[in-house]
Length: 391
Image 1: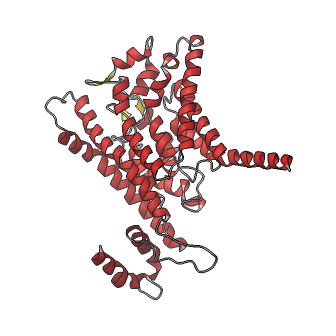
Image 2: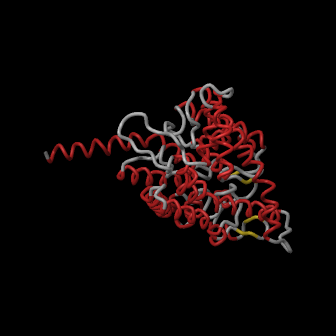
Image 3: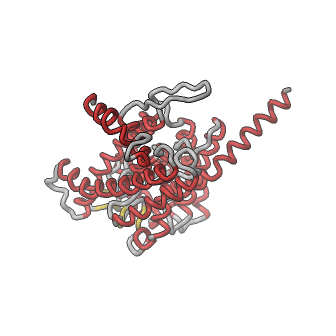
């Protein structure tokens, strides 16, 4: 690392500093230097102290938390491919990982290639540091799309997410919507034939998924799920818990999401209030729908046990990595409870009531991103009124 630091800082950096021949590209260089080494930035005025925990390192912490989902997603992509072909017998973990990597890694490469190029272009044009948020957004976009999606659609959608979801607001820290979810929403609405055409696309896979099966179920929905699946891999509660089901690349495994959640909570990056609130909101809505199911005999999805909702689709992935995104979530403690509960409630309502879209996590989080500032406003105003009354 010392040799690399000498090369980048002592030999290459002067060419990008003021007066150097690559001066106008300084912020592109700065993005790489500050990612690898502790920034040497200093504060010019005011009583501020800089330390080595900058936002890039905080984002890198989230990337580390996403690694279990990425690795399991690669494994499961290969597993589902062989299961769909009826070729599970004799296959090893190495076979699953190789087959999955051939599908997932090109998507990851296109996402980062397009996203980071646009980030650097905007930074150079505006003469400010490269926004570090795409370190997380790039891997999130990869994990919430299907392995079957054309790479050109990934590139176009990523560009839309970066420009419309991030840069038009001024970059990371200024955006009101989660850029990864803006990308996902663009794919869903711009290319409906790829997502919800004759072959049902739910949470990322063409063909049968747990949510798609539950939406089409009749009679005993739990038994229907247990008899449905991809090849030998049926949609049992255990398989959905572990993640051995079809779905988006990184969303299927509750266990992998839980590992990431523990890491984020220990490091203090994510809010436990939002996580618990969304979990409670989703479970509560599941209970209410069970009670109301008798009035809607044609909708077997309403009779699904509440705990099933928590392990299906992208609920846990959204809970851990999307709803807790610090820029777009509510900021006050009470606001975080309200924000999380409403996301959980809306996600279950959308997935069970709307037959055209049996997954509601993406839309629920995007909707509450918009209302998060309003929630915080009323929480703060309520605190001010109570303090004024006491005074």
